[in-house]
Image (tube, rainbow, N blue to C red):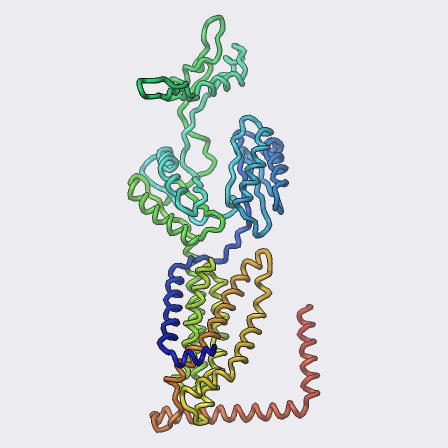
Length: 548
């Protein structure tokens, strides 16, 4: 089927198809997620294990090494990196590119179930995170208020933390600062020694007295009632009355050998907001989630939190999404400026407003059509994809220029509008198709690059290739359609005197340029040996420069 013939003979159908493409592209642009770069997050999972009051050496020996050995046997693991600090072990597992993290998570959980029995009894169950703990938070907030730091921390832990962590795309909310409540049992060393009470017995009695256990069921008519024994401490007096041991029929209670204080945990960092004690919050996103979308949801939820809790005020201190949006805006602006300059260059050389408009219309249509591919292909609007569009702007008009110039040549020979359009387009169709394919072949190898470079440049190759393909279709449909109806031969009497004078000046200028090129071409053909040798020497010099 001849596309140009169909476009010329069925203009309404052609215009409707183009409008459908433009509408789809516009909707896709509105819904495209924005990010600074393509998703190049390493396929990493983190296993975090807490072992309170243990030194880094104990953590490494008793916790980190067993987990490292178990993680090394997981399929697809490329490297295992661990950090042992006081009271915590972090094991970061990096997989090969393309690994399905959901499947990898299941494999890691299976390995953890096998290794848990080898860990100390007091170790908390290892937690698997689908993000890298080393990644910087996308949002940092400062919390201030009239409440004391202990009350503010309680509100954050009990009311705010879960509301932010339930937002789609949020991996965790880190809380720094404030006071955390801590019940301190200060033992009297002299009394413990005098009564010959082992420390592990004291800890065991406290732990056993602070549990809530099921006590079975009872029948009440047609109802079956579950019974639980409330053994958790509800006050300091209950904790103080805990029986530690019995000596000669006399119970020894915790209050007899220790002093109990309702205090706070030891302060390891000081957070101030506007010069007053406060709390800092850090929001981490899940791997593969869009930074701008997650940040927007969190900021919206923070506004609701400020309304719901008047006693505290959450203030954004750092928002990485602002930098991303500014960067994308700058790149987009540069692409628009590049398109405007390309149109001005066309106008300078074509010296015809109608011809310039016909060719220039291929740029926005091709770019808008590319947004459709990006949306349905799961791409994001980032520096790489926008850079690909900016790179392809100059290439988008090549086919349209060739088609329009050949149509104009047929019009100058006296052919009718439709006949010249169909004939002119048909003559250059194989040439522009071949030219487009050769350009696409240049970007094809980028699709097969693996690793981080492959993730980045694959999107670049896809965007440029699809934009060029759309430009080819526009050159074979929209350009012939508009040429058949709006392209007219130059008539001097229809122009203003000044415009006509400028036009004649440009004609003489380009005529001199053409004559100079003809002379240069004749000299090159007369001295072919010199031209070939000079080209080879230039190529050799270029290769030497690359090697250095």
